[in-house]
Each structure stands twice: as C-alpha cells, then as structure tokens.
Amino acid sequence: MAPFLVRRVFGAFVPPISLTLLRSMLKIQGSAGKARVGTFMDKIATPHCLAYCQRGAPTHLTPDNFQRFAKLQPTNIFHLTLPELIAAHPVVKKQGQGLHKFLNLDDSILYLSVRDPLTNNLGPCNEQSYSLASQNGKTRLTPEQFMEVQHAFRPDFFACLSDEILSSSTSARARKSLARSLAFLDRCIALHQKPASSASASNEEPAVKKARTGESKDDASSASASSASSSPASSSSSSALFAVVHGGSDAALRVQCAKEMAKRAAVGGFVIGGLETGELNETRYAMIEAVVGQLPDEKPRVMSGLGSPEEVLECVERGVDLFESPYPHTVTQHGFASVYPLNPETKAMDTDSSASSAPASSSASKINLRDKIYEKDQRPLLEGCACFTCQNHTRAYIHHLLNVHEMLAQVLLQTHNLHHYLDFFRVIRQHIAQGTFAEFKKSFLQRLKQ
Image 1 (tube, helix red, strand yellow):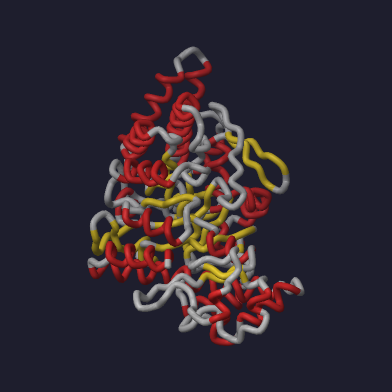
Image 2: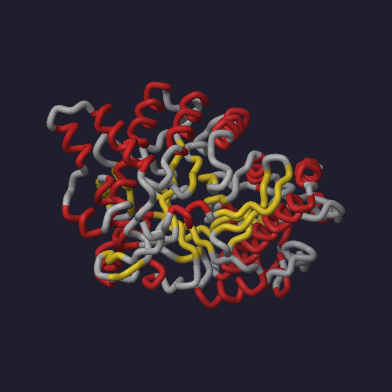
C-alpha cells in the first residue's frame, strides 16, 4: 500500500497514518537506565505532560493568555476528554474539519481520552458497548459509534475504547476487562483501517455478526485479532490509535494484556490505565514496570491519571514518555501554588519566620495561598520563577483574590503552576540526557522531605 494514499473522511480529504509514520511517532535520543528522552511527532520533547483541557480549552487560560504563556514555556500538546466534547460531535461532523479547526488549535497536537481523569468516572461496559458519562447524561458507544466520533474529531492520537476498571477489582473482573478491551481494540483497528464510508455503512463488524449467528465469541475475537495484527496500517483517518493496557492489580493479567496489544501493528502507542484508583504505591509501580517491559521501545507510553512530581519521577524512571494528568489544574483549584525546587541548591521551602509557620495544608511541594499567613507576604509565589505571575504579582495579592473569590486568582495560579510543571519536565529531560537522572530523582525526593 502506498504510505500516503488520500481518502475521503466524512466529506474531507485527510492522509491516513502509515505504518512507517506510526513507528516514527517517537524518536528516542538518549536514556538513563529505563528513563528515556526523545521527540514525539517531531514537535514535543519527551518526557512531557499533556496540557489538561476542559470543554476543549486549557483550564483558566484564555487563548491570548495561553499564547503569552507559550512564549515563555512552549507547549502545544493538549489533553481533551470525550465526555466534555461528545455533545459537539454532530456540529464537528457537519463542519467536516475536525477538532483542530473547531477549537482553533490548528498548530497543536491533540490527544483525546475516553475518560476524564479529574472525575474518574468508569462507565458501565458490556461486550458490545461502553457507557460514557457526560454532563448531558450517559451515552452508549459501540466501537463503531466510537470510531465514527474519532473520524469526525480527527485528534492527532486517541485512547481506544476499553473496559476500564478499578485497581481493586477482582481477578475475575480484571479478566473480563482484558477480554473486552482486546475485543474493542480489534474492532476499532478494523474500522480504523477502512475507508470511513465503509465503516459507517454498517453498524456491525463481521466478527460480531459471526458471534451472533452461532460462531463462538472466542473464534470471532481470534479472527479479528489475526486480521488486526497481520494487516499493515491503512487508516482512513490521520489519527493514531493508542491501546489502553488494563489488568487491575494482577501483574500476570497486565503482562498478558500488554503482550497481546503489542502484537497489533496498527497500534501507534500505549496508555497505561487504571492505576490511580487507590492502590498502594508498591503495587502501582510494580504494575507499571511489568507493563513497560512488554511494550516495544519505538512506540510511546502514556501514563493515565498520575502526575504529582513524585509520581512523575517514578514513572519516568520506569520508561514512561507522556503524562495525561490534571495535576497543575487540581493544585490551582484548591488555591495552592507549586513550589517544589528544581535546583539541587534550592531548599524545598523558604526558611524565614513566616514560612516556618506554614499551615498544615501546605507541603514541601505546594503552599496554600488561602491561609492568612500569606496576607502580607510580598514575595512572588516562587523566587526565581520566570512565569508572568511570579514576575508581576505577590503571594499577598493572590491571597486577597482567593479570599474575595475573584476568578483572576485561578488564572494567575494556573499560569504559575503549569509553567513550573513544564519546567519540571524540562529539568527531567536535561538530567536524562546528561545521564544524571537517578541522582536528580534522589536529591529531589530528599529535598521534599526536608
């Protein structure tokens, strides 16, 4: 197949992603142990975070503010969530130009996940469909309907439909999740490899029809898996499909899921899902290590939900490349400012008398600006920070804005928190490239404990 044949997708011509392009989505440029540094889609240096969006826009930042922000801290990869955007599907489909045009994010990389990590809503699921919870109620999506949405939205990459479960789920439930997720993946791959007109002409895939007419579900799933793993990618969409690895807290099931999904050549990358739902840290990181060990080196790994500085370091150490996490947004929503130190010579918290009596809700990584202790504090949120907020405003001013419930407080806090978070990833990349990541991680965690 010619690698860049152009096909019509719902009235618009877009180039499908070729197998060659899928394999070159991530270019590894260096490593330190399992931690690696590279370039994603020739634009984004990894490891990197995806800027969390609500209703298709970066939280608390208007487009002009974000453009100003991006001049200091370049980022153009956004995390969109299907529950927030599913209601716009008919409009975007009719427009025929995808989410880039609809959201006026033409020069950005867009990632679309099925679940919003902020709400952590795990929809009911059966062998045929997934129930998506949104502000407009619940929407049942079959793989066919799900892929129709993807063809209309055309994100740069998206998480495949899967049966998401809690890490505390039983082994029996985890096995059922694995089987459903693989079946959904194969049906989505089959649709992704067809012209959109063919995919939308029928509501059922052949494997499903066979299962309903007497052939066993296992046989149908096997046939579909064989087709998906042996066929080269000839997608009718320019989006890359990322498989979501599940398995609860069962390491053997996680490994099995990762191995099976890695066999599908049409999969552009992998999302590690279901590991931010209350499991122990030891269990969480053991699962991540087990999964990453089964995934191909040349394809990107996305961590779903985890994003605190400590979690990022642990995941990067195990080979994770991208993070879909609302961490800066969550810090902002609670009225906090991130102050974790990036320089080994910098102490985690200020040592003057005002900071020594910091409120219990503050920590070595963030401070609570609502607290009265900051009422007269004329310092920036973080000494040395180059963000707009720290260069122009004080802790006392943001404390005032928070306590009079002025929305500018969230704008200024988000500007700082996202800037500092991106700076954190920049420093991580530097240390991986220099071969000093292990030392940086150790000193960073020690400073947080001081």
